[in-house]
Image (tube, rainbow, N blue to C red; front, side):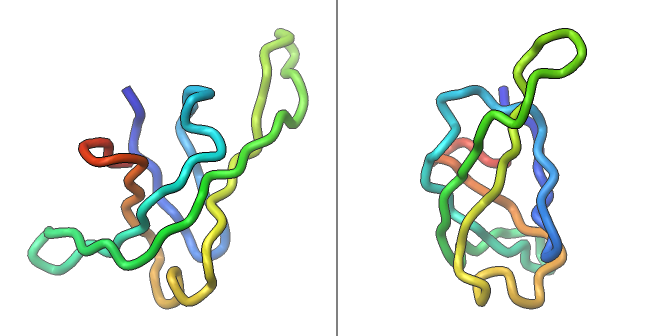
Length: 87
């Protein structure tokens, strides 16, 4: 199961993601004051192998690529990889 992720205007912080999620299209949303979510844009997840860690395990750098106006004025945003899968 995928864990929560917060997208910040200055960068992103991801929980470990399965390889199937790499290079996939995502919906980017906004959480409304009543707790509901509105999907305001799209982007794609781009990840590449950065380097193995000290144990020899693969470590990836991951980014969500989208247009700047999608994230304008947001400090964090929910990301949906596919219907029913919310990060």
